[in-house]
Image (cartoon, rainbow, N blue to C red; front, side):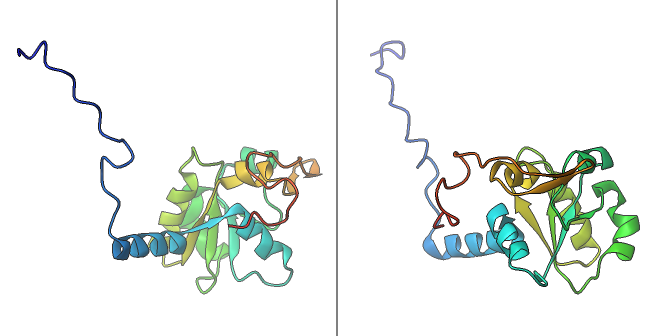
Length: 164
């Protein structure tokens, strides 16, 4: 058979094209991931519990974005100002959780990196402000408090806890 008539090799399974990591490596990876990230529901639960949640929530977006909507109780510190203003706004002994617009934005990651370089313990809130709103949590705008219904694709319909 010539190359032109050789039957095509079926494509490899794209999921297993790269084999899963051995369990010990997976444990290290996922444990590390949880050390760097918090999700919207966990942040909301910690803030709703009342008292000191044990962290400071930091919105790293622009002033225009902050005015459009932000999480109640968050501190506003745009990423570009972290190096010059973090020392006046944050206590190095208190962990910081950063957020930005959403999963398509790396502003919270850049803010977390800048804070870590300054000696802060930091996590990034997965989903950012977008998922805060999509999960139906209250937020504040320059006009006052707002809340949208939870998006059924991102939040459990009839439960306070998704079970994960």
